[in-house]
Image (tube, rainbow, N blue to C red; front, side, top):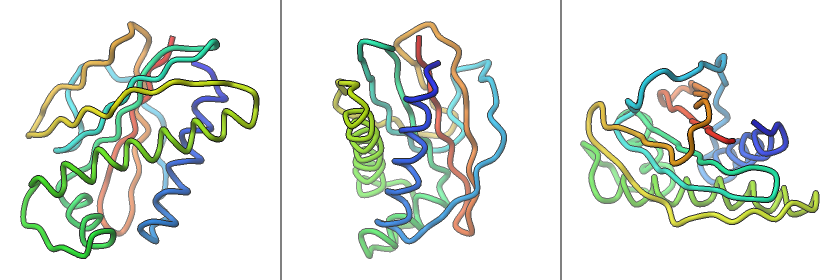
Length: 153
């Protein structure tokens, strides 16, 4: 996996959460993913392609975290993963990859991105398009947990 892409995604993630939701989550240790099961209940998945790598990024939120994120960013209180939570998850995935695209563009790397796909449900599957090793980066905050998955070849 290209470290430039990973760092761009991490920097973008932290920027989006701190500016849009006033959250600064703490990253955990990376984990090599050995299955297709989501660690959260709602996931935004995008494909990314450039001259240096092809792959995808998924952001998977636990119910507690997405409920808090909806309240912080939209002002609504939700009781479960509903359409508002799904829409926000897709938008968060889009903002994270869009921010990474801007960071990489400054380094002369052009990257294309797909429209986000939103998946939900307890133990739903995340199927990355490319055969590379998927790495999970877990995050914790006072609002709950979420998981960033990165898969590039």
